[in-house]
Image (tube, rainbow, N blue to C red; front, side, top):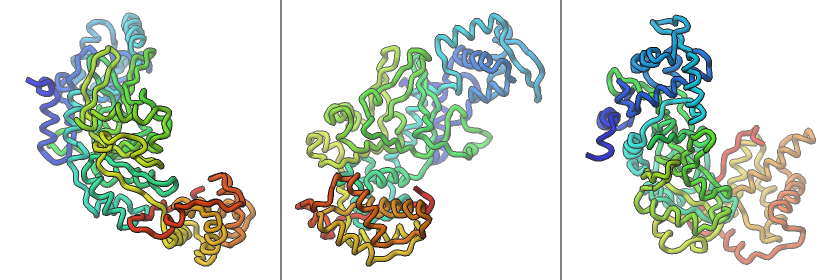
Length: 473
């Protein structure tokens, strides 16, 4: 018998999986089906009542995310042991509960041992089943899926030919090229190509340890909760429905963020970034500029990328095996071959360069953004600006420049109570401050031997820019 077979909740999980294409955790019909011990549930109940003072049975059930009907036996046991007592009657054949003096002392010891108060956890083994059912590799996005995901930005058709197979594979990719050309914008949209929502536990438990998985900073919860696809069954409220996650980390990434972080004061642990990104995307932005060496980061992931399994250490010292099921995207301004070796590059099979736009693309970006800024597009003014402020200094064109320059013009016009418009005078003013701060270029022309090649409209270039709302500043 395997570890999965031994979990009481696996049967209901698998029933939900095979009944339809959509995974949905079925509501447990008994304490046994939760996969948790009655003692663990008792501790959650008592700690919550200690925090709030008094609560009805249904309020307690709502707080710990378990069906009210399954808690009757636990309420009776706590009353018989003089831990809880009825303090008043509640609606619908319910009661308000409060702790006895003995119960408060016990709850205080429980709180000192573990300060967690919230949803009952989900056994790790049940989470593993859910990841296998909802893996991003089970989907195969097509061109129309990419078009829908990138609907709010402009992408050249050539880029679809490169991005499509990479996203479809779910194997990970490098996006590299000069800064300001939309690599992060592209990467952040990729998760949307897969579309489907997923279910994740709010908290995990393994070997008596609690690991918080749901993180509002990375997980976008759905506002509506669907009924179960199985008849007469509601979903397990210990789980939460979210959009496929996109976890974005930059230069602040450290190796500690890739391990389970345990708080010795609260005795509660936090899931690492790769666990929070399961069934979604993990974007390592500005790769190569972290405080750790690229080789150390890559060595940490080289085995998980190969086996789709990761090994983590919980607070008890026990090693646990967890899924490593996400699309990993490395976005960098550096050449990937300068950052890592051939062994790692083989495990990231797709390397896509996001190169500078051609002059024609650059002008189209201004035209597109002018509609968002409610400004008349004047091609002659933009062309003049390029002739006077780019070519003499050999400045490379970047896809972020139209957005940034128009934002500065709008801010200047708003401050001076002027109409928003494209004029050579406005461009002269904002270009001078923008490029001096951005690239350290003064008034003297700067020679850049590669610029002419970058501006020649070479094949394979893509056009990426965010459509900004008119009130975005």
